[in-house]
Length: 162
Image (cartoon, rainbow, N blue to C red):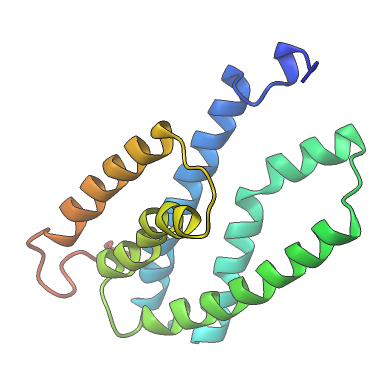
């Protein structure tokens, strides 16, 4: 491609944004569990709405960048986005409800396991998966393993809110 290095996804600014989004996204589970532990905690539907707002906020930098470039998605991209939004809506609701029954660390474990599964599914369906992706997958698996093997009693992993 003939794009300049300043618009390349490998620039330092883009990597910084990616790290910021990942950090914000990773903190959502802990924040919601903190809300669920409050004396007058919100319902699962309210927690789901709050999580949806947090997730939308995480992707705000990317959305603003696309708006600035005046890139208009194609019909196929819009349909794919709508499909993913429906899946996300279902998972958000189930996730919010689940926070009332399991620890935040286990909820994070389940949510982050998708990072491990995706490259395997891609490979199974014939897509090429780079060595960098497999290395990142191994590092994520290590992190998930550490999280899953943490010796934390139920409720002990919760964030103190008062």
